[in-house]
Image (cartoon, rainbow, N blue to C red; front, top):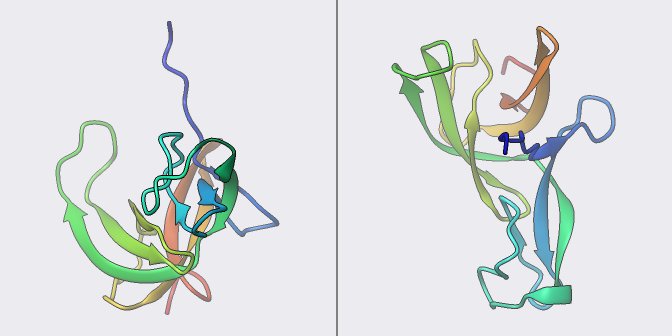
Length: 128
């Protein structure tokens, strides 16, 4: 069986990227990435644990430069972002962005050579 690519985001409206996640109707927790094991806070599952798109605005907590990678051109930056809706998400930071701990960022979908990728950009665009 061939591996199928799983898309964890969608384009929302215009340039706004949304992440596919889960929402717990029992305790209100949003989680990412989507999984069906149950809520990470209260353990609810089944019909209480529903698919939901999550907004991608958040705060950059930390970042690192990746110097060696099997399939991606290097170097690139990865950042850990605490989304305003709760989950912690690790993702690429946009090329050319000078990262700053505590910076406000949002998810964006970038298309290169007809391939899409998700990355975090500073709120207000690619530069601060």
